[in-house]
Length: 417
Image (tube, rainbow, N blue to C red):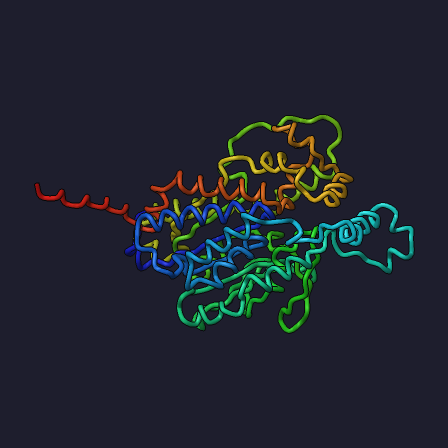
């Protein structure tokens, strides 16, 4: 749709979705966009995104960018370096003792633990222990800076989403100016809060994989897990917080090449079933919400201006960038790089190295592994893919932000003869 106001007066929002280790792709895209900005305009130091929202691993990326919104190019570079040199041990306990203490006990409880009284007392909480991630966030993401950046107008709003196991409600926690009101929809609400590292851990607590986190809601403690669960409208928080142009960075399926996945034969493994469930949680809601937003835009474009002005709906200019290659297949090639204790444990549910030799099938657990492969060889490939996808859409990026192509630098005058 044609813009109703000059682009420099518009509020740009950033929506980063979940996906575990797949979130490296988001950082590659943002790195590519920042490269385009540098080539088109004098970048300055402030962020081009006045509203930042994130879910799951996307919440962590958004928080890292929001906490340094006053020096955005530096924030992108720092985040890129983290993902470029990632190790799984920075996210979860990957040593043999740590894996046995969490994952092995957890799997045992599913098999014979119900018959043993001592397992009832142990109550293991998750497949993996993400204590290292808590330490990484405390050291690398200055959450305490965000309220000041919102107060000073560098950011208009910042939000992360999580899902309450206690009440079944999907909650968006936001920090914004005093003018911003909370909102409520069916099974999802928004509340003003001072967002902390615990909010990030809650938002990124992949079900069964990482432990739930306690957060206060309406004065009562509740247990929260990954914000991608029950998230029916991932783009909605950015729009509620004032964005009328939204950059959405997905983590799979939207732009991947279409193909029919071959049946590997035999009954599906737990890894295949788990990977399918993960994809439903992390990927499908975004595709549906994008389709819904585009349908609303198309409908509004058919209304005459007077009727459009009376509608509670408003058009949203949206740019969606998602992987051009199958991340599942990329992950399948890197399963062998998972730490041995983790690989051994996941092998019990069907994750195996043969996935790399069975491209085009769901066998081997490549889908499930893609959410846990916080290893440099995998994340570097996703960073490169994200940057390449952003640069391939340079014209769309420039049009979305209103960045003119940089005029060629004039050649110096030839010296006099």
